[in-house]
Image (cartoon, rainbow, N blue to C red):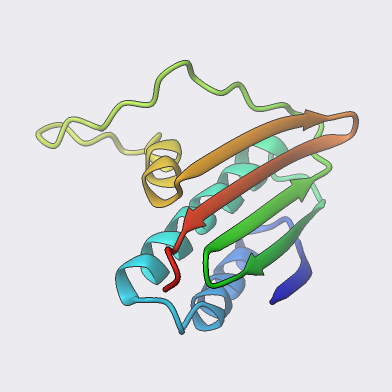
Length: 133
């Protein structure tokens, strides 16, 4: 099954989209569904705040679900490129940061995370192996 949608790149639209995504993933076990939803939410917020820097724009999502895996491709037209850190470490549980945990959450939720800078924008490919779930 494949779903394609476009949402405006602003925090209000992302907040409205997040419960819809969780509902669309209702057939997955609760741990996978909530973790994936949180990770996608984090990515979308990062795109708005750091990619578009709160300027107008749009975010395209293509969600493909099979019995083997869940793939979410997120594309934007933001002028700002993302710089993937060499290493993504777990935060210190004694001294949790106020922000900056999005990439850790995304990498924990998905089995594969690929970022590409496009000629006009960015593309993220997120894959969660379901193992026939």
